[in-house]
Length: 317
Image 1 (tube, helix red, strand yellow):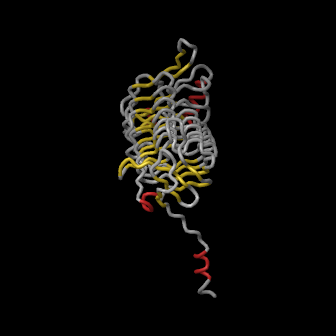
Image 2: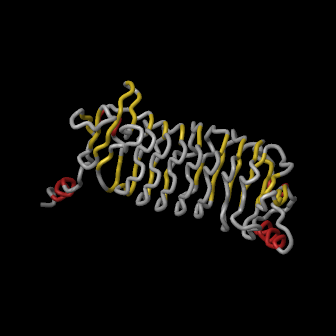
Image 3: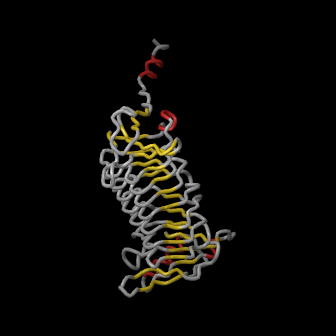
């Protein structure tokens, strides 16, 4: 019996289902379906190396996706030869049956609303091949807690409009430090109430409207290159102003002792003491102001960044 038990144990482990390609019972707007026995998803073949996941049926139709629970697309390319180069608009949008999704390394482009409004999804894994995250790709995934991105997201060229907007329960740090996009688009990283760290690439030049609007609480934002040359007035707009628990710090990227040449957001009045205390807690010794609060014609108060040194790191704490 001692020799048989290990074999029985191995037999008890369920094998992951392989994805297969089929042209039977194909819904309108698709050329094929892929299935693993639980999930069945329509795909559209543009060319041998360009398949569209969840092709829409007509201008106002829905993408064809049937199944429930965890959706793991890891083996799609290996099992059935389908290289998913793009995800069509709304590929998995409003699918309340999905609890988690793993995208394959072959997926390079997420177009608009890939998993938008999927209110039960709690976990997402993005493959190493990702090059573009389109508008509202993860919009209002209100239950999403974790998202696994390739380390630094190398090769990512686009972070689209409202891509992560309203992911209010997301807790995972977002690391784009190795990406090559030049703009954090309007609303792209807004309303992330529980994300405590965001790393932005050296190539960044532009912060769009409310692109990094923040909420009270501890958060760190790293800029790995020179300061953006184009910053919308409301890019760092607070929900309430001033926000006493936040401090903006900038320091030269390659300084031997960046803490001695820090820049800190100068809160006004009684909030200055809070800012100074936070700077002290961070161990900063060369604190200097880098901007000011400004009230616009519509009465909205926003932060205006001024005279940042070249080659900087910036963080909000």
